[in-house]
Every structure is written in C-alpha cells, then in structure tokens.
Image (cartoon, rainbow, N blue to C red):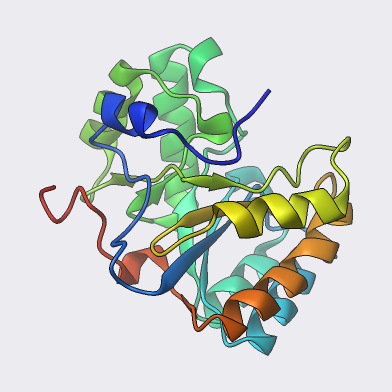
Length: 217
C-alpha cells in the first residue's frame, strides 16, 4: 500500500525533511532512485535531454561501484546526485549504526549533500546520526508525488494518470531507474515530460530549488 500524493499530516510530522519546494514557481523537481544501471539509466538520460530537463538521481552505492561510467554520464549531463545508501537499506528494520555506516560507504563515492532513505523509511535517531556523520549540510529529501512505477500490478496508463493529477508547482516527483520500474517508466516519463513541457513547467535539480524548510516556513 502506498500513497501517490504525500499527505500534509506526514509532512508536518517530519518538518525537518524536504517534501516539496516553492509552490509559487512553475517548477517540477524530478528524481530517480536506485540506479545507475544499464538500459534504464541511459533511457532516462536520453529522455531528459530531449526536453532540456534536469533531475536528481539518488544512487545506490553498489550500483555506482558496478557501473562507474554510467554514473559519470549522469554527472556529465548536469544532473544532481544524491545518496540512497550503499545497499538500499530499509531504515525501520536496520539498526542505526549499520544504517549510518552504509550511508557513509555510499558517501565516499558520491560526496553529495542530498540523501533519500530507501522506501522512505527512516527513524528519527537515524536522521540525527546521518546529519552528525555527514561532512556537509545534509538535506534529507522525501517527496510529495510517488509515481508508483515500481508497482508491477499498476498499468502504465494509470501510472501516468496518477502522476499528472498529483503534480503541482514545486512537486518532488519520484521515479525509479530500475529494471522493475522500466515497463511503466518507459511509457510514463516521455509522456509526462511532454505534457508538463506544454504546461510551461521547468525541470530543476533539487540543488537549485528552495524548500519550505529553507524558507523558514
């Protein structure tokens, strides 16, 4: 069970995390979790380039280590990079020390100020531990639109409908550059970008946006 649109109550329970950016600007913050991997990540890069779109890739350290050339291609294309742990650990079922060490192992490869917890699952004590362990002003980024592209039971057409109906100014939208998500991502991403482009949206890296948290709201 998952929600396409993150409820306001959840955002209020974790106000120190970034859920969306400034609603006053016609911008969308695309993000891709779990890569980089062959076939899928190159497809994403090619599709983004077609629409002059920038995005943020939350990478798994193990995949970066396995596919360093793909990782360099993501960076060379001007996209932002975020930490997604080295082994895609689920925070709620992992002790804080193990979780922090896995984060640090990934950070040795990425050196990024951005982090997204796999599955969106993280304990408050883990949030505190990661910020203490980071050698930068770590920003933990969640989302307010979850595409559901990972759901093998979701038809591509419904996935597209969900994304388009939930996205608004400042939305952080989650896709996955993974083989599991590819049947839906391949259908949804170009169609969503085409629609948003016609609606006048700009596609921006998270490093170039301002969150409500940063604005002190």
